[in-house]
Structure formats: structure tokens, C-alpha cells
Amino acid sequence: MPTILAIETSCDETAAAIVRDGRRVLANVVASQIELHRAYGGVVPELAARGHITAINPVVERALADAGLTLDGIDAIAVTEGPGLAGALLVGVNWAKAVAWSRGLPLIPVNHLEGHIYANWLLQAGEDQATPPPSFPLVCLIVSGGHTELLLMLGHGHYRLLGRTTDDAAGEAFDKGARILGLGYPGGPAIQRAAAAGQADRYRLPRAWLGDSLDFSYSGVKTALLRATEKHHLTGPTGGRKGKSKGQQPTPAAPFPTYTPPKFGPTLPVADLAAAYQEAIIEPLVEKTARAARESGATMVLLAGGVAANGLLRERLGRRLDLPLRYPPLALCTDNAAMIGAAAAYRLPVGRLADFTLDVRPNFDLI
Ligand code: KG4
Ligand code: ZN
Image (cartoon, rainbow, N blue to C red):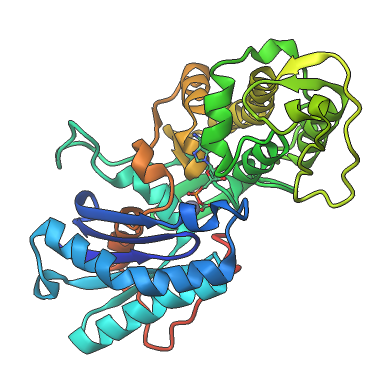
């Protein structure tokens, strides 16, 4: 019955959690840096690393206090080794190495994406130890800010890649789209909120089906969204573009340095465009995951990563599948350390541990 203290610092959340048996969350603390990065419209790596340094001790202390434990009650230390921002990962990995060494505890390195998948092993409200864990083989769709991967999982730690994005990740597409529409950061929740007030069928954006492949592509739809904003007079809650009539320039979308000022055409509510954009991102995810599930002999489907928090994706995929679908509760979809503790629990018994030469792996592929 190992009790694992897990640390996650791969991006802009400083997180510590205590997980027992790989399934029971005794504490889950996430210190978000969103406010620190909001002014820049995205994560600034140096600021993230510095933020982790100041946050990590209080976050771990809070996790121990929430669980009613001290380090004496901890059997192993788990930490995200990659992928992620090098400077950010370094803070967590060095903290974990120092504590594991000084306490004589096993050190378990975890791939961040594997963590997202294993968030599905954590017990949810109304479940207990008798609730069966996810069954193999299963299909898992990982959709985060940096990754979009469709996997067949044959056993613990045993993955086969079915498809992946050829350019932007789904979360990245949400973030860039929100920036184009002036909806702010992080983009996924902002687009989902805006889309709730809009109608998806008022504007058609393209989907990249890529023939028979199970790969994804989002750069085309992002460009199509940008063109749509140039061809229409946008109305709704963005502010920037409405100001044009008062002689102000719209704020250029930061990732497009060659941005040309829009020629205003017919009126189009931002909410409708956000809804159309959300549909264009979600539809290939749903269709390709459903096809992978049918063709792979899977017993169930898992959703993982920040975009798994998206309501439309959850609902559409649930309706489209003939197999059971599981996804983590909202708080465990986006980055957290409980998922790292869950993945670590399956590495501990098979001795997949690190020694004190452990280093960060910013470009660590799961497969
Ligand atoms: O997994 P995550 O927290 O960090 C990475 O490992 O990348 O995912 C963050 C991504 C961001 O791109 C964010 O916009 C997206 O997840 N996201 C959402 C939603 N909530 C977060 N995307 C769509 N709908 C949401 N509700
Ligand atoms: Zn993540």
C-alpha cells in the first residue's frame, strides 16, 4: 500500500499530491501561475521556473498537511521528468532528488503524458477501492496544450501509437484561436464559454481529415479562423475589433507578426465563430477516436489532458462510442500531481525507478 508524494512542475502549475495505492488521492494541491503569465498571453518559461522555486515548498507543506501526514508517512517520491519546459522541470526534479536522497526514499520518474493517462485510474466521487480500474486493451486520446495523441494501451506502460497531430496540438489550437478572437488565456475554457452563447452552424470552418489516417492537423483551421476575422465585422465580447469604428486599430494577434488589418465585411458574432471553431477542433477528435475504438478491439476509451475538460468533446464522444468512455474529473484533466502519483504507483512494483543522476527530459516522447 505505497503512499507516494508526487511533484509536477512541467509548465505553469506548481503541484504536489499524495496518492495511496495508485488510486486514492489523499491530497492534491495546485498553485497556478495563470495570473503571472496572463499579461503575456502565454507561458513565459523563465517566469515559470522562478515561480516554481518560490511555490514548491509551501505547496508540498500544504499537501502533507491536507493528508494529515509528515514525510515519515511517505514511501516514495515521484516527479515529472518530461516533457515540458526545461527550467520548470528542473525545479521539480531537483526538489524530488534532494528529498528522496535525504530521506532514503525510492525516486520514481514519470512521463507527463503518462500521468495524464493515469489520472483515469484515480478514484472519482462515489467510487471506492472495489471500483474496477480501466481495463486493457483500451484506446486513449491525449489532448493537451502540447500534445494530441491517439494511443492503444495494451497493459501498464505498454503503448502503441495510432495517430498524432502533424502540426498544432488541440489545446494549442484552442489557445491560438482564443488569441485571434481576443478571448484571452488560457484559450480552451475561454472558447468553450464564448461558444456556449453562440451557434456553431452559422459559420463553416474546415476540418483536416487527412484521408484514412488517424492523424490530426490544426494549422489549417487556425488560419481559416484568422481569415474569417478579417472578412467580418466581429460583434460580441472581445472589445478590440469593435473599437475600429471609433478609429482604434484592432490589437494584432501576437503569434502572427505579418498580420494585416482586417477589412470589415458582414457582421458575425464572436460567439458564433467560437462555436464553429470549437466544432472544427472537436469533430476530427471524436470521429477518429471512435474509428480507432471500433478497429482496435479495445474494451474502453479514455480521455486525457487539459482538453479532456471540454464539455462538447466529452458529450460528443460519449454519444458516438459503443464502448464505455472514462475521463477524469475537471480538476484532474489539467496539470496536477495526483496523476503523476497514479502513474508512479504502477512503476514502483516493477522497479522502474531513477537514481540520483536523473535529469530533465524536455522532449520526452511517450512512445
Ligand atoms: O494538460 P494541460 O493542463 O497542460 C499541458 O500538458 O499542455 O492542458 C492545457 C490545455 C490548454 O491548451 C487549455 O487551453 C486546454 O488544455 N483546455 C481546454 C479546456 N480546459 C483546458 N481546452 C478546451 N476546453 C476546455 N474546457
Ligand atoms: Zn499536461
